[in-house]
Length: 232
Image 1 (cartoon, rainbow, N blue to C red):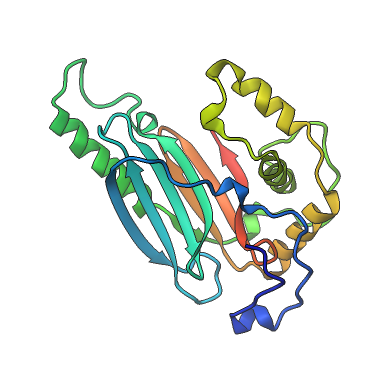
Image 2 (image 1 turned 60 degrees about the vertical axis):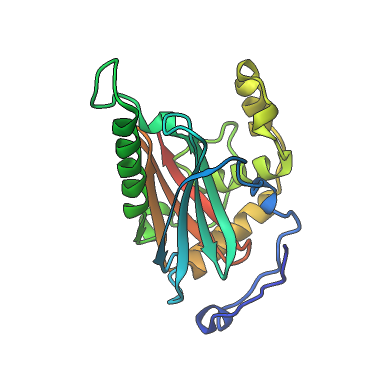
């Protein structure tokens, strides 16, 4: 998957190009869940700000609308560069019906919710998500409002190669704590942050479920998106 600064866009090719990172950040791109495709839709957006069209693809897998596995993917240059997954149950918190409801009503509601997730993917300014400095001093605990720490966390979880489907529910917190305390290459985090700050022209906002909101940015160095900010 790794390529040494494969620059196909003239705008980026004209910029300086740092070496590719030693650690491959792609292991988090596991195969999509098995099962029938219940929902599939896509949009064309310029996600990286380079003037070239990219794709946003939203899919949901499963038999029932109340127990789907939803997968949101970003494609750049025909390759998947970001994936986020969640359960359809997260879209059904405080639904507009009582204890008894027809399956058709839930189906219609879920399709509307998924349509809204796809529709609200938004390309925005990158500036507000980044701090002015390029130096990065690791903190004792990763915090969501620090973009560099979010990038460091991406390295940690990629290196851990965790198959979350095999982690028992009562062990998730312990696994997360162990990963958050694992080492990472501070210099590489700094390099990715410089790459985003100097070369990335746009950010991407994503919202889904009950109240999750994320701000992401493309790194040409890593050939993937990084979550810079996430809430709830």
